[in-house]
Length: 68
Picture: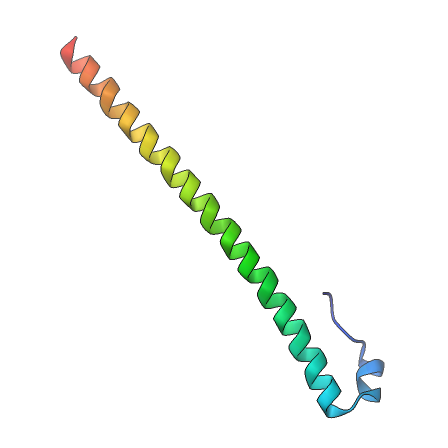
């Protein structure tokens, strides 16, 4: 949300309105951060699944080499 209300606009607002504006900005930033964390968690989960699959393939290749 950028810098929010400009300083001149903030001076025209009551202290309560200023606090509400700041709270709204914080809530927006929190929502965006939560979305980012969810996206990163999903990415990490998918990468771990890929790592697990690659490790299983490596074990299979190793076993095939030992049997040959």
